[in-house]
Length: 180
Image (cartoon, rainbow, N blue to C red; front, side):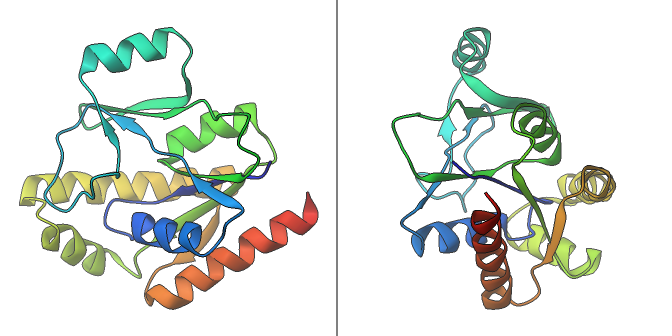
């Protein structure tokens, strides 16, 4: 099973790219992360499994996450994959989670989706409803994540034009399947 880690700053388009790639590839499943954060107006019904802190903590203590992390005061975690599902798995997670996955699955394909520049990233964040303080925190986090992704050997995918970014991710997955 190929594991694909799709990381990048909030607003870069990870979710949109992930849905497009998984929707076009029957051999690929999207892992649905758990989170303790509040649902945003732009979250699709299946974006996350929204849970309380106590529900999250109980699953974490039981070893039910492949990776988990705290981000801006909320917890996020990727459930341990169902081994009965033979499809490759795409994880839409942050770089810290990607590091945890690489510790367990060194052959994972790690892709970092980014906006063309910080000005565009700011526009996308405010357009989805993030306030000025939250946007500034996310931009600072984006800078840190870029540096960490580079250290971990992530492949960068710039999402300036959605169709091209989707095609690039599909191409990278196809190439990784040949190598595995």
